[in-house]
Image 1: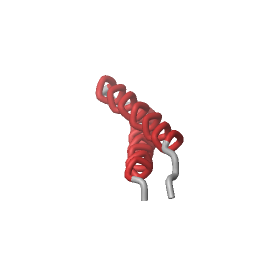
Image 2 (image 1 turned 90 degrees about the vertical axis):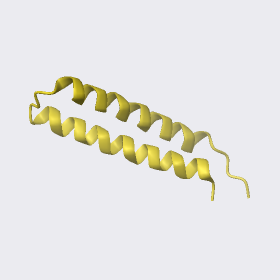
Image 3 (image 1 turned 30 degrees about the vertical axis):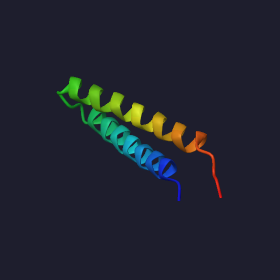
Length: 61
């Protein structure tokens, strides 16, 4: 099993989780906007880097 592909999947799941948390906090009108923005940006970075790792990693048998 490829370690890069597994790490990419974990990053993608963490990114999705943080984006869902950010959306939930924005819907509930959280007063800590800077914290929500930072979590959202980190979630986007995790999500896109995870997708990139999964997509660009070659399968070698």
